[in-house]
Image (cartoon, rainbow, N blue to C red; front, side, top):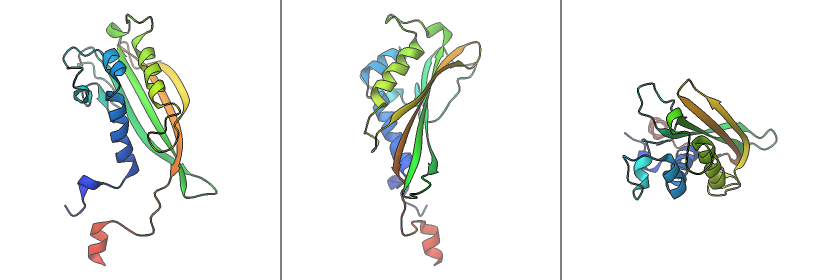
Length: 172
């Protein structure tokens, strides 16, 4: 491969790594996910088991679990300033019906939603301030309830005055 895949210069890839780290680095989120098969002292093990950097809908064959899934989208550039764009972080929490009750006085999907809002709302860890714009409860089927959080940020549009495509450079 010609491209340097280890050093991808893409803000979505970079920010999704940071989002995953922010989620698994929060000990309260790890505790509320409640996965007895994983060691809470190694929270990065929760990535791709209970925390997914893409929207994953649990299948009917899955063991009763709680999941945090997320995606990051570029939606539009500003009408008057092409140097800025809107990015949206969508976090979808799935909790199996057998795990909704907690000892904390809140349902597990609501509690995880609260913790995630506490981590991300008004945070500048992704560069510019994230603002919560939507917080909705839902269901997927008879087994899973959900909480969907959506955050927005205005961020630089990664405009470069040159092409970085190594395949294109070879053909010139």
